[in-house]
Amino acid sequence: RDGVLYGTTRYGGTHQPSGRGTVFKLDVDGSGYSVLYNFGSIADDGMYAFGPVEGSDGVLYGTTQWSDSQTNPGDYTPGTVFKLNRDGSGYGVLYHFGSSVGDGLQPFAGVIEGSDGILYGTANYGGLSNNGTVFKLNKDGSVYAMLRSFTGVPTDGTFPNGTLVRARDGAYYGTTIYGGLHTA
Image (cartoon, rainbow, N blue to C red; front, side, top):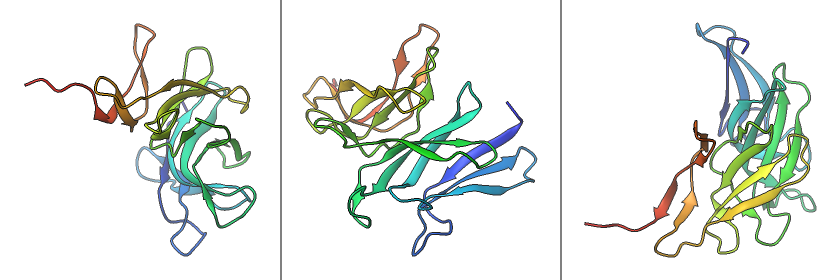
């Protein structure tokens, strides 16, 4: 909306030894590069980010594959959904994955905003069979819900690994790494 590109890095940033990643911005002509956020800056922060997507409210939303343990820093827990204003202010973790039995774990893709203003995404692992999930979350971090738990049986997918796409028909489409029927 503002003519600026926003992205994430999986590694790098100020938190060492290998960095935990960043959120950055860049003008479309290649100028104006700056880091908006260094992951690892707060307790219970995420690391190894995906996204971000700009919401209808002008806020950036994304996921991280891992996060620091809420109870034992240095131990890793299975990812977050985060928010960040476009000027780098207002960072916050909206959701820590693994918060409930059967929850999604380790998202490998960003989120999208649905026409209802809710964030939708996938988690590569977790769910009832540990084969991944599709989830939704309000932009204020409330009302997390698992919409689909992949089963991994021969007719179902396993390990979703891409950002969902909302099509004109109103349905959400995505991909999984494994699963499904193969016919010759």
